[in-house]
Image 1: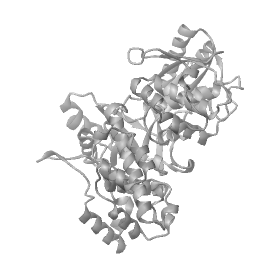
Image 2: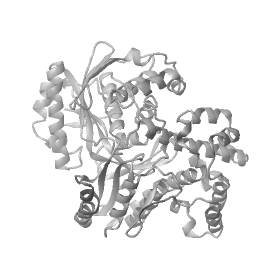
Image 3: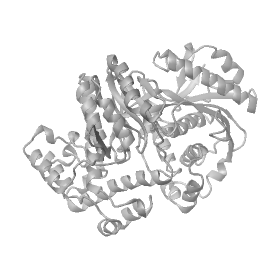
Image 4: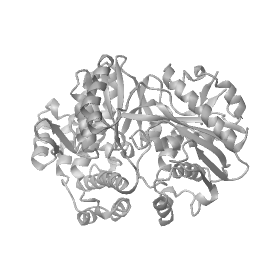
Length: 545
């Protein structure tokens, strides 16, 4: 029978993990051995079995009947906790039955040879680990990836799929600098929709990381593995956290997993509502992490750091407790909720680049303004910080909602979360109009006043903020979904600027939602309906025979 072994196990030492291609093919004549991985979902297990067999055949055609391991990493949906992992917040996530698989064999040298089952879209690539590590100084990962050489490499290779393999090789080698990693032959394939907000690129990082660890006999703690994968993507040019990678690594069949960051830890799990499904609806609008999109993502992250720095300056007595944005929290600071509302109210609504340079330390300005082009726009510090604090509150407190069966309340939090990313609103008369949650002076004064009265509606989890990384198309999908009876909540999936929408729906309302999406969104635009009904599956690992 097949099972999964983690990167922290004795993977490469076990003959059950590394087998000749022919033996793997003989073991996977049916999908039955994979059912446990996919939570009993026969359809997902069948797709995976067929894909792995294709990859094994392709690998044997290119590299021969060599000893290989099979690593997989699922796509993920971050059900709560968007944009806050790099601020020390929580992510409440689940893995879906779509994944990236890697068939990999160890080499005697330091060369990496990559082949993809879709060569027209993802061409063959080869590289040397030593070349990837050029100029790397032990113990200074951030300094190296922020340097001109790595930034230029990232710019020149923008959009190339092999960058994600190079990235995890670089991060693991940098962490284990005294242990030269062996190269490998790898054949890669998957069915996670690309640029759909389901983290297909991060799935490559995680699956390749599992294969590297297995074939090099590395015992890597799950926490270190997750953090390494998150930091690896800095090599590609993004400056996010490890939320996606944690969701992939630690996912459990049938449950949502709550992870905290800085430091990384598993905070808890919660049952997925038995009477519900999560429908993932692809907008067909690609959510790419290249060019202008990456500048926008990094621009919003910069707003977080600017806001945190300004709060530390404005409240020096609280500064020692504010290491990360998530620390601006009543229990952490020992203040009333109204005090946090007042702190946010005092932040500037927007700042130009020159004002930022004048208002924060030279180190903060140099580090975070360099992550994006200067022409992205002004910095909406107050709205971004409010979104981040509200999302931290939601992701911190939503596990009890699910444990107590309060699915409808959880769905309402999903709606509020999306309002913080929303850029447009739709109605029958006016059509599409611009939208931004009101974070102006008067609105903030009203919120602070309500918080002082201990009005339940002033709870920070019910605030939207204004992160604004959605699109009009995504907003319309959300509005169509939430208009259907039985849909508890809907929001954008992933980092934003395109991709997918996720909707928490009562099982009996699935057909009505799929019909509404087809009739009111997909077909009028000449698009093929693309809706995945998901329940949580197991996390990443290498298969063992």
